[in-house]
Length: 205
Image 1 (spheres, rainbow, N blue to C red):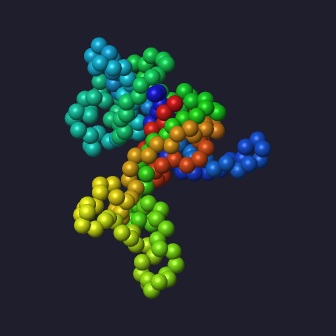
Image 2 (cartoon, rainbow, N blue to C red):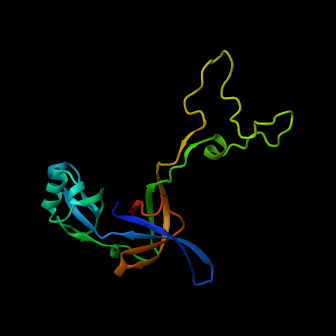
């Protein structure tokens, strides 16, 4: 699917034509530079490698510097491959937010906020044991039994238990584009997008 790399700016709200207040996320989408063109003859598939957000030469490897020099651009912090572009692009071309149209729907993927080590109530939505009745004074958020007795004498894989939460790739589908601000490279989409402010997101058409 064709798309663009962006950066989550934050959330706001706008009013629609019926006066309803719509929560929206503002994303700085592009401009992205074509850093490599994958072809069927050479790579076995067709795709475009896009780079976004300039990095300093000091922080780049020699391989990154050579790769960027070939495309005639600076080293990029985020590089992602996309398939399915309608137009033909060459090495070094810029792809902007203008490829999106107000009213269309997109899928957006990002890395969710890290929550650290969490218990089962927060991580999996367990209800606990209800009120502190039956003589229980400290079991409200405990996981309870996690297995049987002498058979099978083990805990099955995938058992919902406490552990690290967040920091995973999450994709939210069918988010409507409310505004395209081409002069500032901004997209305003309905709803929330995974990740913290200034985190990278991948927008797919």
